[in-house]
Length: 196
Length: 196
Ligand SMILES: [Ca+2]
Image (cartoon, rainbow over all chains, first blue to last red; front, side, top):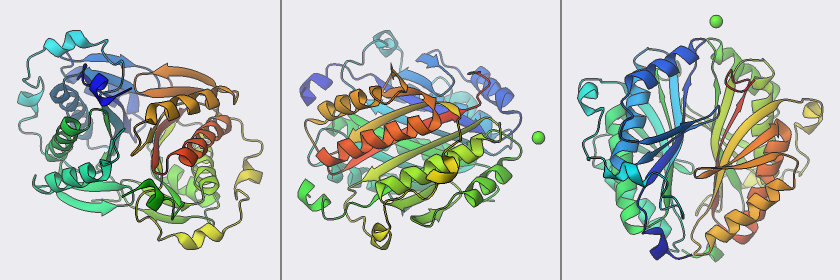
């Protein structure tokens, strides 16, 4: 396996789960899914995670929108997941790669301010020089208007949900241009009683 | 940075979060933390994640025990996290590396059956031959009495919680012996209304 082979398919994907810390967790999840336009991504759900695949712009658009819809209930909600690109053999959703680049949920999210805290780590695979790529993307995040701080094994971002997801998307986009197989794991939390 | 340098510190760590899908999430989290012996690990908590660091055996013992204590409430609970080892410069908890290898919570967990579903992915960093290492550990999981299936970007494990964590620990242990800097991301879910 070489990085060259990975480049033949640039479909990206994310395995994620939404966690409403509420007795109404089922309704909150179903409502969020109902309100979010997922027409530009391939999707599969089971009892542990949801997998969404397509262009980078759309997998970030969908995850951001689902989190925002859940957070606006005012309940303590979290979302965790792992974005991936360049995984060898990942091409089943090639049909979705023809979708236009316009994020389907951007209009309805235009005025949806919501603060959150997030930790993420980016893992460029199969490269000896991977730490340089990690540091590059941390610098990128600093430029995006979110508060950036270091945590063990992860980088913390605090600010508006959309700015946080945009910073992660920019970091993921930048690193995957240099490293064919890249993953990014994240945990984002809103309305936490420990952070009011 | 070389793999050689990573080997100077073999402290491991995990950034994780427990998610009870219940109005009583605060009590469930605090009770689980209260019942679990964390004396053999370094620990730090904020509103997004908890970080635990020490020997591999202890970070898996603590995360497994916290998840089991929360799951026995019968509520739908999930835990997600990322185990890491070999992260350059990670040595602040060296004092905890002197702890004995006996897992502190094994006795009280001896009879705590609990079914769960889990997805995990292992990411050996800084090596060109990383995919071989991933496949090796997937074979290892198969030998441990949990049901193993493939999911996009991740491997799914179904079975008893202790068998699931043991399989992940064995995989992490095996891969980190070959690849100095390794991370493993996981999501485990119990008592889900979608998996009864
Ligand atoms: Ca209640």
